[in-house]
Image (cartoon, rainbow, N blue to C red; front, side, top):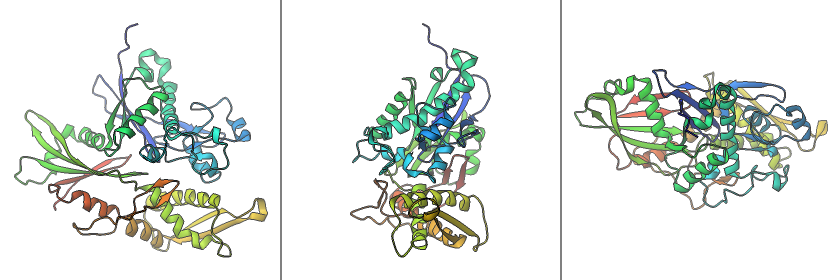
Length: 416
């Protein structure tokens, strides 16, 4: 059978907290379009969104009966918004942070242990980090085919040119496991990996005249080349990459060469959620009793939602952010525990704790034993700025900084 010619280039960002998919036709002048992924929003409704939360929920029998016959992904695990919401209701049935586990060398990433520490699901029903990643990727594949496959075989997902992005600091083992997850998800053997900072740089160039705008934004230093720092602070990791860019004769697209990449720093949105949870914990304790494991999981899930609300806009320092979690026991007897923090306290832990001002010769604090939550060896120092200072030490001066997120890429001139 003759091979079907690919019609689209598909790029998938397999994230710790959220994943996303974009595509562009291989012929013609049309630009890149973000794919709206259909996903369960509640047990009775499906919605489309530009991101797919990388959370997986295993419904109990009653919930599964409501979803029966309307699954949007493979198997019994539900991926996306509903799963994320359930992390705050039934955290023992929700797996998350699979991407962080893929690079955890002390763990058997093919073993079934997610959701981590859960007693709500039998061991044989749990999933491995590889399987969890495969289910997220498969949800993307199923969403594409649900929209395009009926148009003909040349529109099917398997026939397209597919790229999955990974952190630049992923080592060969983590990259291989990502490809294994893609294979389990039914991706074609031709799928390839691309480092996330490069993908962000390419996207910026696409949005700015193929790079023609780059030279106007970079400072005139008289040097033959410039250095651009790409900063990517995600849900599970913080990555820094330094690129050298040089003009290419006859084309606005620059010659791009990666100069350096940071160590794999397990520091990101997950750590912020935990920090907020620790800020709330003393306010929620009853009779000085520590929170139970299940109460703590509820608190972290609520802290995640609260963090996003606080960072999505501005407000007065005394703006109040409440949180409630189940009390001990069940039903009305158990009740709920409630507390609140103001914006000033939240911004204090998020800004001062993770992005404190520092000088160029500051270095991250290194301890013999780093913080472990959910079984993951998070970075011992939560200051992203000190990690960045350490990365830049001994490197060429930075001429511009590209900040990457899932909505946009911003290039700012910089002098050091």
